[in-house]
Structures are given as structure tokens and as C-alpha cells.
Image (cartoon, rainbow, N blue to C red; front, side, top):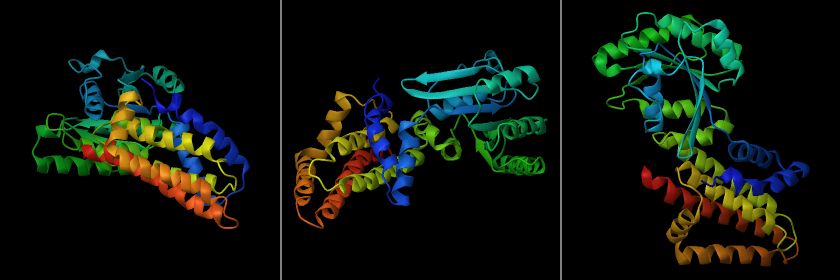
Length: 341
């Protein structure tokens, strides 16, 4: 599977190198940094889930990724303290399961092998010692710095809704007493998939930017996160297109705008779980249509011609470049992402 990282995103390296040396406004520099972290530095998220063997740790990952990536017949089948690199058709995540009673030496070795981006405290509704799980999650977050902790109440389908709300409030109070960074509790039910979407969006939002794109791709239920990230990529790409187009020489921006726009569209496709291959490109091109393609071509031609106009030519060209890039991005979002909402 061809991914933006190994194809179009690599074409941004020269653009980032140039922009790093050119003095430009702070807003555009921030856009370049966001785009770099989202696309060029992207990687799978490293997630640690703390919970007892029967709390549904593997089931939670299966729910998030909407496929059976880990066995769930016996949740103890996966050894505590071993990182699991999941790669299901290009949807990737690093997953570590820990029990509250994990040996300290084993725990230390596991964390040294890869610091977590987020810690999930998973507590089933019938658990009698939730505090031990919360305490270990808190200690992991403290040891690793400012790592977010998300508390999940699992198997809520086993109790009445009123009882589930009471348990959530109790967990929130315990989390606050223990000094956890966040005391919000997410209720999740595997049979009904209740609460999975809300939790997935909150989890992705809490991750470092470099881990958000891969996580959104890996979690199809996080539609809001997919759209948010895609729109951020399009906005940042449009801002960078304006900056590049301000160079006052005709054709000087072709080498930069092309990889920028290809990386933008291919990354939106990647978010939707699509490979950036000939079939995907053909589908998207067909959705744009002949009129849309001709419009993009006319924008690019006009952009180059107005650079020949003394004075304001480059500013007009920059506006055309930004509008054209935004239009490309919006068409990709509409085709790859908004159809699935």
C-alpha cells in the first residue's frame, strides 16, 4: 500500500526546507509547523490500557478499529507488558495492555520500549477495586510527563442506565481524589457500540499532532476527528500555497505547489482509509469532473500570467493559488470523507 509518507509527503521536504529559511508571517509559519507534524512527522499512536484481564482491553481496541485485530475469547491470552504493533490494512496503532498488579520490573521495561501518547484506565462496571487501576494510570502519566489519561467505564450494558451514570460519577470523584489529569469518564458498551464514537474522538483529540492522522485513519468511528484533521490540512495547505505563490517569477512555484497539493489530497484519502493508487486517483478525478479539472487548469494558468503584471501581479497570483488549493482540498473532503457521514 502506497502511503502519503512514502510518496507525496516526501515531496514536501524541499518546501519545508525553503520555508524554514524564508522570513514570513507567524501565522503561515504555524501552518507549516502543523502540516509538518500532521503529515511529514506522522506515526502510529502509542496507547497504554490499564485494566484487569477480563475488563475488555482487547475488545476496546477492536471496537475502536471496527475490526477484530486482537483475540477476545480469553483476554488473558495477551501477556501484560508486551507492546503489540497492530497493522490492519494500513490502519496502525501500538497497543500495550497492563494489569494493576503488573510487576514493577516488567512495567519499567515496557515503558522504556516506547513512551505512551495516552493512558486509558479501563474499568468494568462490576469491578470492586477501580482505585488500583486509576492509581496505576496516574503513576504512568506522572512518570511520562504530561500524558493524558482517559477513564473508560466498560460493559455498561450489564447494568441499568441510571446505575451506569452513578458509577461514572463515582469514578470521576475517585479520579479527582487521586489527582488524575482528567476526571471525565467515558461509558462504552461493546454489544451496542454505545459511547465508542465519543471516546474515539476524545482520544484522538488528546494525542500529539504527529499521531492524530494515523489514529483517525485507524478508527473509522471517529468521523468528526477525520473531518477536523482533513480541514486543518486543507487550511494549512491553502496558506502555504499563498506564500509560495508570492514568489514573483512565473513557473517558480510549480515545483512546490504540485507536491503540496498532491500531499494534501492523498492525505485526505489516507484519512478515509484509502490507498493513494491509480484507482483512488481515478475515482477522485471523476468526482471532480471535466469542468472542475478545466477550472483548476485555468486557475493555474491565470496564476502564472498575472505574475507578469508589474506590482500587484504576485499578490493576485497568491490569491488564485490559495483559492485553487482550497478548492482541491474541499473536493477531496467531499468525495472521501463527507460521503461516509
